[in-house]
Amino acid sequence: MLQKNLELQQQEECYYREGLTQKEFYQYQVNRDGFKGEAEVYQLLLKYGNANWIYLHDVWINTGGTTQLDLVVLTGSGVYIIDAKNYATEYVHQNQQAFANGKLLSKSIFIQLERSMEKVNLLFNNLRYSGEIQGKIVFVNPEGLIRLDEPASEVGMNRAEFIHWIKGIARDEQNLPLANILPIALKERILNEFQIENPYPPVPKSMKEINQMKRGIKCAKCHSFDITLTMYKVICNQCGHHEVKKKSVVRTLCEYGLIRYREPLTVSECEVFLDGQVSKKYIARTLSKYFGKMNSGRYAAYANKNSSFDYAFENVEFPFKNSKAK
Ligand SMILES: [Zn+2]
Picture (cartoon, rainbow, N blue to C red):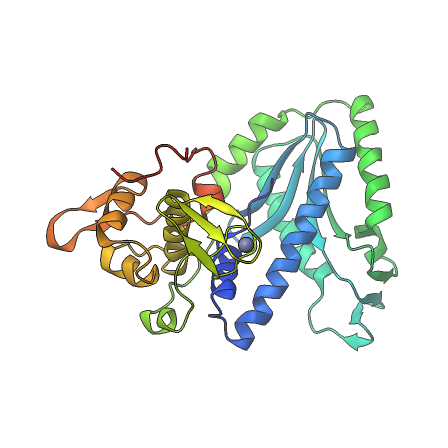
């Protein structure tokens, strides 16, 4: 499963809590649709590619200049940089100009990829990598009407062309000589020697902004705030979903952490955010047990997971029996 980037995780949370301005809402939609496209491309690679392929998703690299790579496919014989586009509209690239639904676009995704590939090539030169290196743009949305002239058509592919291309790479891998660095080692070296932190991390929302958002626990499934809290459970009045209360509280505290990105969590702030649905004591115990105390005493603060619940507690079980804070 591909992981949503932090910006999208935070935007999603603010969206459900009605805390996005119109401009932010537009940005959220762009990111959300972009992620859907990447996830789709990834599924196609898993389906049609070889099992030994290794993937990198959403990595920032620095090779003297920085660039972000959506999806990197490492095979035994080559490296493929894939930029997924989820356009559901008409997209035309003609005489070095791009048009979306007939409107001229100011930025070219092909020039963007070219610049990114310059940095990618530097990276692999640096590693003295012997395999082939290609950059591709994939228009993955089946509703997109894509028309590309030369030379864009050498780099851009629609969904059907992409599937065909993956099959070709998979077949060729059996016949081509292996590159001098194998996929697992290559991944390690890229991450260890060239990866940098995302230079555009989410901005913590201010208390003023948070005060205008919806508070409390929402349904994990349908995101409705119309819930009933019992001693041990959270029951959604809209879709009927049941969740262990401890899990709901930990999840909601993760949501608050994303909104407050990188700021430590305090009991009193979390109490306000949880809208009085659980006691201060319950929050303090939950924070201490699942998030970890950073300092004690009057100004006690707890670690912010800086991640949505699904990723931060992916492998943690919340058994019903032990759900009550002790
Ligand atoms: Zn629900």
